[in-house]
Image 1 (tube, protein in one colour):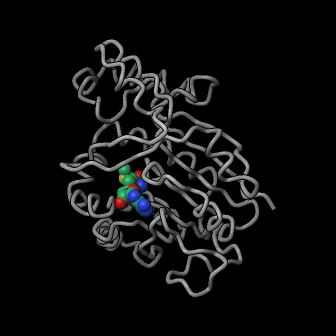
Image 2: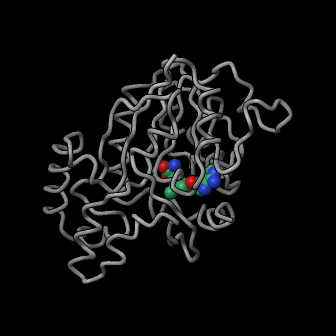
Length: 273
Ligand SMILES: C[S@@+](CC[C@H](N)C(=O)[O-])C[C@H]1O[C@@H](n2cnc3c(N)ncnc32)[C@H](O)[C@@H]1O
């Protein structure tokens, strides 16, 4: 169970990922997109919120957040941090497993996500939570039911085609690893000392899963020129190279086809009326 695996890494997650220069830089790019869509008074549903970095950032800008995750240990960290940052009155937390979300047609399920009526101005899933789920149609149905017309759905999955990963592993004669993201039945990914099974859906697949209620409006690449986080040590000790790659990243993140070759994608969907 991936929630048990993420429970075990919850206390170390911020030190080992959130606080790294690469993750901070990538998250800043996501925040720029959140700032473009959400503002004070909005109510946002956050999926796979982890340790609450994005929920707290939104709440500090006056956005109310329903922060959800399958891991209760992650939610505990989110609650503690939101109290420390004095935004706990704007952040509610709840367990929500994206692999088995409540059916919006059933009113007997626990949880308040499927009560319909489009209560949220938008939803967010940052940094790969979606990749932990194979069948995304039930989640798409729930989001269609809960997001208001013209609301924004910001998804940040790990991308199927990551140029850095392919080139790096081909140069190291590891062709199987270079193309591991293309396997239809998914792969095992390391999380702490454990592994979780992950899938890498294409943009086309995600567009189809979220249609007809959501339309894809924009694709931004996160980490077009910068490496995936597990290869960060390659550039961590070369600050000049890091800065140069970051500038290249900023220039190319919205440009086709480079935006489609990044480690992560920011997919901006709109709930159509
Ligand atoms: C890489 S972390 C990203 C956390 C956070 N969004 C961030 O930006 O730092 C992935 C998160 O997805 C959550 N997750 C994994 N599988 C899930 C599932 N089936 N349902 C809900 N959350 C899940 C994990 O508990 C973890 O918090």
